[in-house]
Length: 199
Image (cartoon, rainbow, N blue to C red):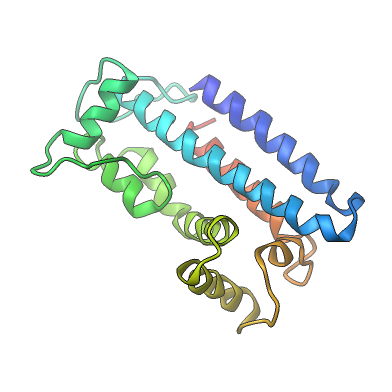
């Protein structure tokens, strides 16, 4: 787990420092830069979830030295991923998705005991994962479906739709508190990753 946390720690600190420097850029570039940072954060979380879950099934202890409550014993990362797709399933999962709480829990449904702290952490951060995914998807896809989901986030924070609101503007706004939403996402992502490895 230590390499996963070291990577998460290093990357979230870098993203946080970059977020501090957004206002040094020309205004026309600030929104794009903020969006790039969120896409990078999302990718870090997605890759870390897959790595941590696989290592747990291989028996890697958490960083507090506690032991994962495995239902299977995987020999390698690839074996762990294969077991997540097939073990105890009448229909194998064609692929493993690590972008929303429901899918993450489903990936581990027959391989990790539901009393394991990994589940608790994913449930605790379920709303954050959904919100980050909706914002990221509208940055990357910008289609009708991603727009509808992004508008849910706008309504959540502003009480209604805001004309001209884009992911970049949402990320940079100070109307939701003393810190821009971008910084809040980075801090929440760091907390999620720290709790996942029980650092």
